[in-house]
Image (cartoon, rainbow, N blue to C red; front, side, top):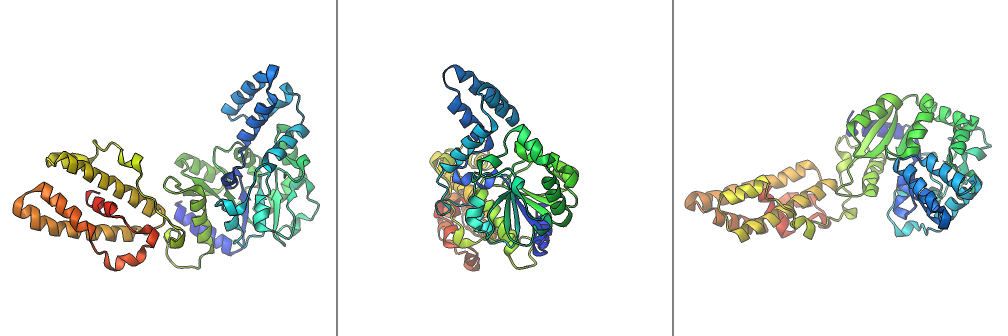
Amino acid sequence: MSTQLNLKKLKKDYEDNSIVIFIGSGLSAPYGIPTWKRMIMSIAEEVAQGDLEFIKKAVENDLEKNNYWGAVEALKNYATLGDEDIQQYVCQMISRINADSNKCDNNYKDLKKLKCSTFLTTNYDNLLYQNLQTSLMPVALRDIDFNIQDLFKERRIINLHGNISNAGTIVLSSESYRELYDDLRYRQLMGLISGSKKMLFLGFSFDDYFMSKLLKSAREYFNGQHYIVLNNPDPSKVTMLKTEYGLNTIHYDHSNSNHVEEIRKILNFLLREESGDDDAMDKPKTEDITLIGANISDLNEDKSDSIFYKKILLENIDTSLANLSKSFFIASEVYIRELRASGMSIDVINAVFGKIFIAYQEIFSEIYVKYGDSEELLISMHRTLESIDFGRLKKFFSTNQMMDNEEIKGMIHI
């Protein structure tokens, strides 16, 4: 099923108050909160001194194989660390980070706008609470002492893997994970949520070690359909998530944007009034959009094998003009990619190309048909596009989205 269809289903479930948000480490990444892998490696680097240098290598070997529990066991066995020592290391590591919400763009502030009452997270930090400011303090799963049936009555945060506010709740070793997933409260919680709500997983990657462990442990509770937001997932993994776990994938591409912006588009889509427009998620909030354009690395890209450049050479265009045209082409190519990624409708972009094509036809009939001069045609085309009027199409572009001259000139080559 396509992302657009999954988005529409998610929006309906959200409007029916049926969504529980499940948050992974990706949402804390903008603050510089280390991944589990980085945390484990940092502990190894701190304790592997002198004669214990071999511990670092042992931990590295396990982490390279994504065997996180093996890495933790290596720390416990060779560095004689107990669970309490590792929990303290984790708390100190995260607490040292100045996680100021006002200094970094993040999706926690977007979650605050949602009407969801229940948030689950595998993160140890307090960033979700700092942004949501719930009346109830976050609670670790092991500390739940309220009736599970009251779960959805008030807005609350449940830290499945513990929280740095109480180092003893941190879950990181294989033993602590087994205890967690065997806990009656965990089974009751997952059973209730899966039976009456639908989960939206945010901030996870399919390759996330603990995500895969969590899915496998909760397989029996995954009744109905749930949702997961992923960056450019492999189609085979999308199929597997659907067939084995009932997870509908909503994918995005951050290559011309960033994770925060792309996830924000999805969350903003849930908040929009019904518009009847299947492409509604692509409608940009123009005040938030800034297009950068091509940089020097882009302009130095080799285009000798491209159809555009081969056509230029066939016409025996002067080398300097050919190179200038190549720069225009790259600038326009980068601009169009960024414009589309910013949410501009493909219909508007196609209408822009329509005006470019009409201008080309006009110059072609005036210059090439009469004189058969390819160089003069190219020069005249660049000059004409510099002052082309896009008429009513201009209203679709914010100030930050407007084309620069070189980007307009390059459109004829696209």
